Length: 361
Image (cartoon, rainbow, N blue to C red):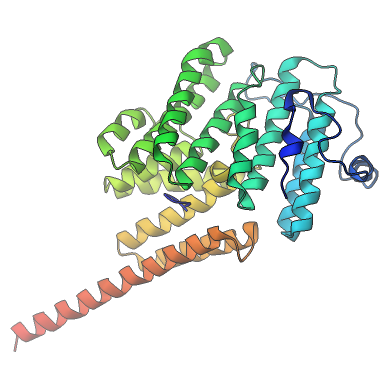
């Protein structure tokens, strides 16, 4: 998707560490969010940090901010209009502003800010504002008290956006920075499980960059060890693509199916080990893995299965992004290539049958 796979808000992001209320000068901003509380879409502003049961070393996250993200994303999924995107961004901006008013610890505040910034970046990317989508991702790197998972997700998304733009050299530099981030801070987190997952993700994104460069041998180095349970989400997809390129179709198929199953079971920003944004978000991984599995079945000559998977991918793309989104065009291109392969295979089979018959005459 994208190249390898399938309203300006710069004021909103200014002075992000201390969000000021002049970012978007809408008098309706605060009343609009209060309205969400009043109508039951969000809970009142009392703050009780959300604790994840999957690790003792993961910073708490403001649950109200997560509710605001859910509301904002739900708004654009249901309407997909310029107005709904603008309103969603205003809601997320209020979520950022509210974090500077909380008296909790720095890790909680910055991790929550980082998650909101990931959501903002995803919305901007969906609307084709790639340059603006990169700004919040870059700013997350300055939130040094935020969780490692947030910063890895931001770096991963930056790599993905640059690959989408064809900026392979920049992608390689960013992937190296992601690896260095793990080297510098990973062991200090005290979360062995998290370190292994984030290490697998950082290696997988570097491996993906090498794969896009066409250097399969270099990619192989980074995908070594990705076979265990720490290879989740986008790492599973990237490793599957590597194996697909090596024509190890059975192993690639297992990883695509793993990525699909995992992504289908989760909500955006629900798993602190699997945060994602832009073309590395859960929904994009699900779409890309479904499409990739369809392509693999096509390569195996299983055109009935391929057609079914491609149809699912098309439906997902249209439901999630809208019928006129570029990702829908990408899926349609994959479908066209699948039918071209099918036509070629059927023509070859027909010619072979004719040849055999001529030999028996």
